[in-house]
Image 1: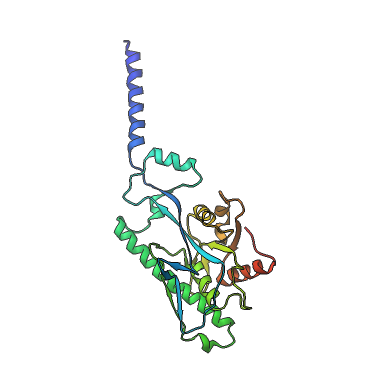
Image 2 (image 1 turned 45 degrees about the vertical axis):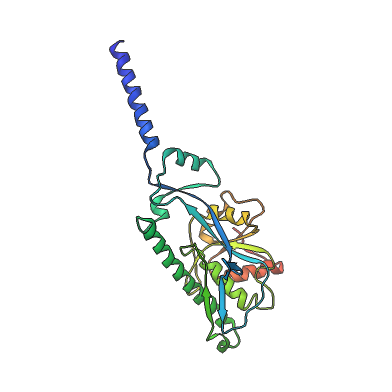
Length: 265
């Protein structure tokens, strides 16, 4: 074997070793998938998601479904083949691990952080919903002692805030004229919310639209800034409604029920 042939063989072996190492080495990514959805107007594990006391509530039809994603954990090994597979599929997304888990290095730390975010989201959703109703109510005294309890297990983070707030409004007031906000439809959505009713962006919207479609939704409410993301791999027949505030979301659903002009992405 000539010196040139030996050198070429060594180079090939070196490149193959690098490729093998790259294929087997863990990478700083997580792979995400469409997660569960839950009807906030219904029950979760035998308990109402929304319980309201010291106020009359309405019997509702239709559904308001919060959506979620699931992702490989912070301690999971994601390798090159996993990344390539995720890039090639429409029901998976490869995301930087720090984007999925910005806080904590262990499953326990992340679970604690997500639970705290969910608790805060529930509190702001309640404030936003009651604040809107008090502004529009003829008799504010009717709402001053209202108490709201939200219960949704095995879900963390702040992205259900918008749907929680819409659920509270629907149970207490509907569209304000005796009708359900949903118009009998299965409406899904995502978005954080502030106590003042502003809707904020979240992540994983394309996967959430797929989860919503899987569970029967035909309408998806999305933070306006994420309209472009929501159109990626949008399931056939899914209608997108962009929102920036709780008031805007309620008004859009009213218009949808009445056959009026509805915002679109």
